[in-house]
Length: 121
Image 1 (cartoon, rainbow, N blue to C red):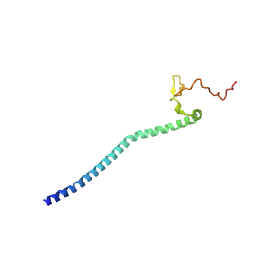
Image 2: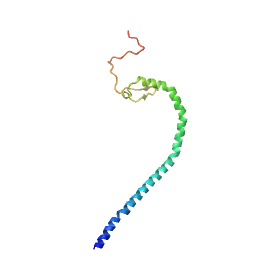
Image 3: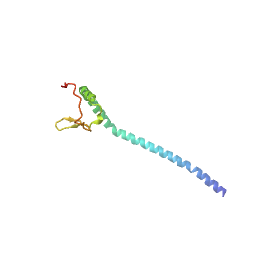
Image 4: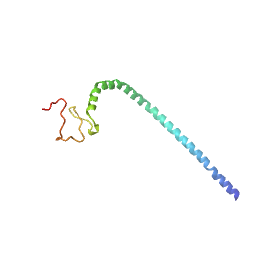
C-alpha cells in the first residue's frame, strides 16, 4: 500500500512539469505566429507605403509654396483671434465666401471700441 502511495505521489509531482513545458511551447508558438503575421502585414503594406512616400515627395514643393504665400495672412489671422474655442468651424458658402461664426453671438447693445483708423467725432 505504501508502495502505491509513493508511486501515486511521484506521478502527481511529475505531472505539472510536462504541462508547464507545453505552456512554454504554446507561448513560443503564439509569439512566432504573431511575428509571421506582422511580417506578412508589412510585406502587404510595403507597396502602399512606397506610393505614399512618393506622393509626399511630390507634395513637398507645393506645401512650401503654400506656406510662403499664405504664411503672412495666416499669421495675421492668428494675431487677431485670441481664443479659437469661441468660434464654430469655418463654413464655405456657395459663392466661395468663408464664414467663421462665434459660438455665442456678441451682445448688439454692448459698446464697441472704435477701429484704429476711425476718428471719434
